[in-house]
Length: 462
Image 1 (cartoon, one colour):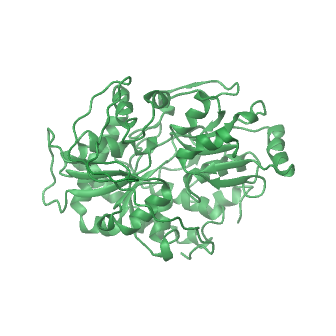
Image 2 (tube, helix red, strand yellow; image 1 turned 90 degrees about the vertical axis):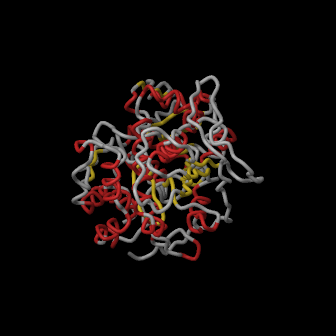
Image 3 (cartoon, one colour; image 1 turned 30 degrees about the vertical axis):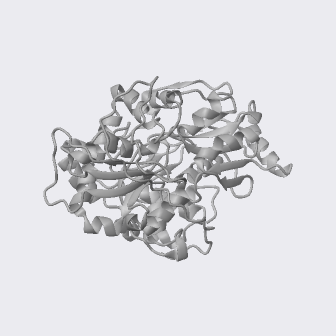
């Protein structure tokens, strides 16, 4: 696969991996008085808090011959990170022998990329939470310093759903919902003609939150490259930018979209779960050299993650999940901001009906189709195909896709870990393809024919 001709601008390197905690406890709290998990010892100024799993737990299933008990994983403070935090805080990592798992908050996706480039030995991270296809981009040196190739392995999908597209209040009454009629399309196109183009943000270029808003616009007859203006904004800045009016909308993860409605800044145009129900969201990926050196530790880590994902999906655990993740050292938001989306309750605003469906909440283990945690290779193929669609990757990518995906996607390690975690055979996918995927506009993606999908799309760069 050839490299992009276009190079990403480089951000100044920021180390965000915090100092390790002296210890962790099993946390139990109520929504009105959230705990402060992962207390940090010795963190310096500008250092994000981190937490390390060092506890002993009941029902231990420690892996024999485990090569290391230590790893540093980065995360971004949005709901996609919940399984990593819960696996550390509730002792699921420790249960399998991974007693020194540090979860380190990253300032933004650029910082996470920089930190995985240097690895934990250099003060960075070994892997963690990623948008797709960032692990592929890092593996090929497409977004790294000096185009250095750092092989990454995709090991698990962290969640489905939990994202949305929010729009500024000034656009209320224009019909800017999931599907746009001709008048709504003309309204957005007219903004560009008037010299005030529709500005929409995502948190990192050429990755899934960029794809969600591109798909929504293009499916509604609007070319995101010529009839709108897209830009990169860290998730924590989105609310402030919407308040100042410097952008018209954004695509990002909970809890940020909901704040737009609750603070009366704007409204929800669409949930990504409406655009593509039960869609793949973010992933756990780790440096290939770490995994190759620590195969049993990787299996133990994944087994702990799988148990955490099962725990996260139980409705009776959601109050404690909210209490833990909302804490100062993790998301640092009021529990009330997390509660509605974790219940599947979304106030859409602008006269749209509210959503009240637990299956529309962020899901971590099972959705309406099947297993969430398993990293389907067919989903990786969709992200690569969309990258070709928008000119982010060369057209030769599709011809080489099997080789490319087989090098990065290690679903075989997930299956081994699932057996270790006692997952029933019925819950372990038999195929690396989830089959034909369906989108809100009627478009279908058949993983066996990605070229046909690409050809069917009216708006694209190829």
